[in-house]
Length: 231
Image (cartoon, rainbow, N blue to C red; front, side, top):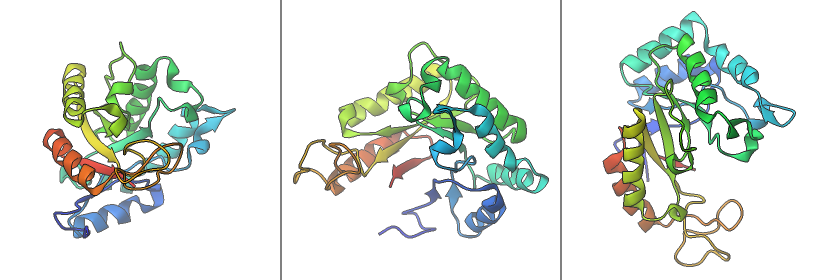
């Protein structure tokens, strides 16, 4: 099992409220951990107006980090690699955002990144978005990376990884990889012996320990310093 602060688990990903940032960064530094947070926390409905993503609401929540103490703490954490980056938004392609990102995908994400950089200029930021689902013809210019999560449904893991690395190199930003351990296995109902059990929705199934090891080794070879698991 993974132990916090060891080579098994060295980074955490999750939402952090502005009131908790300084303490969390101090804890991570003291315990040899890194953190890759979302600094605009809340259920996705927090950021909707009439069912559609509202960038004003997102900026208001992210803007709570615009204090001298938090800015200083984040700048220091970036410098010493306690906070290697920050997630802007989860899966902008998802219909939970009310279709806001269906048009001008890159422009709208770059607007969020530009706002984040106006407060924390040295903090790398980007969305969690499968590279293979990003709209063609778009290039992120203000985002520093994208985080792409692998599912079995995306086909051969090594080919998908190589496609992601090529995508990032072509677009001029970094990419980190992730594994969907709860829903990324072989799909079907019931979830059989070739899965890790029933997933969280639809016909999704969990990954097996063998898949997790195989995919982790493959994706870990290609990632830019971070491999995460969604749990």
